[in-house]
Amino acid sequence: MSAHSRNVLGMAKNQKIDQHIAVFGESGSGKTVLVSSFYGAAHDSRPESLYRIIPGDMGEGVKLYQNYLGMRDSARTPEFTKFNSDSYTFSVKMKEASGGQEAKTDLRLIWHDYPGEWFERETTGPTEAKRRIDTFQSLLGSDIALFLVDSQRLLDNSEEEERYLKSVFINFGNGLLSLKDDLLPEGEKLGRFPRIWVIALSKADLLPDMDVVKFRDLVIGKAGRELADLGNVLKEFVEGEEALSLGEDFVLLSSAKFETGKIEVEKRIGVDLILPIASMLPLERYAKWSQARLLPGKIAEKLLNVGNLGVGGLAAAMVGNQKLFGKVALIQAIVSLMSKDVVNEAVKLVGEKLREANEEALAKHNYLQAMLTGFKIDLEKAEAEKVFLRSPK
Image (cartoon, rainbow, N blue to C red; front, top):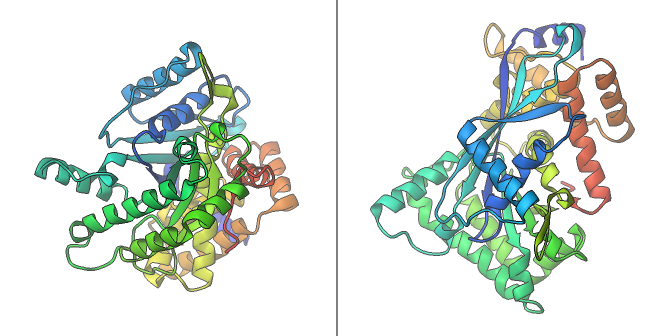
């Protein structure tokens, strides 16, 4: 990238890059335990970390950390939350750099937790029905959706796993269709809609012999048709349906190792990948979809434009820009051209080049770049360890 481009990228300060993630799972699938483990682990003695995770609501942060401490110190799981439709905002605050060189840029993860009960039964009245619609509308800006498959339910249906897997995909699809008229009142499809659906095995510690490849094969082998049908339902909601991914990315998740009278929170699986997944997959996938012209032009421009501080903002930070440029005082044509170059440059950072960029960022105390390149390294490592499986597309 040219020196001029880098100078333009340095125009804005105090920017926020928001990444939204929607978590879907039936009741009892472990959503509350998962978010408690995610937040608690970030505060449990990691002095070498490049960042801190700060809750947007301090009361929610206290509650989540209490849940985590209850597991760690008293082997007590969080109370079951029924019909709770919570959203959590986590700000990722970077480590201070010497000389004031670090950008005043925050990465924020907005975590939307959708009650599983609303895909398992009808609402009890108009008030609850409206709350369900409002809750779903709040997560429509998400780039990533985690779809939880419960290991306990797989064990309960051992040798007949298709009974559970088929039902969970069918029920979810039917639940979405029941919302369609309210979400698309004019019949027009949505430009903003979760486009990347990662299938996640929750409570993975219960199935210690199940790596992510075996998990993928189990899901597709036992319920591939139902998964494809769910994909067709999703396509009814989203504009540019070719730019949609379901059943292509898989991850193993375990909030801790649970045993009788003991919960070992340090033996979690995949929880530390949630922030890298939420940050990196949209960057990679949107760039590929844009190049293949699968994303409608206006949507691609909005998603990839560095000036919007979404995916493009992440790309700009990853390739070494200490500050990100904003939305004003820029000619749109220049922004669009630069955005494509920046995003493509970020996507191509893999393997040895990725590690070199990470080491250089650490040496220069560019902690935002170091964190983001570290996220990609974490995903590569998880793939090698068969905890995470990324779509080849």
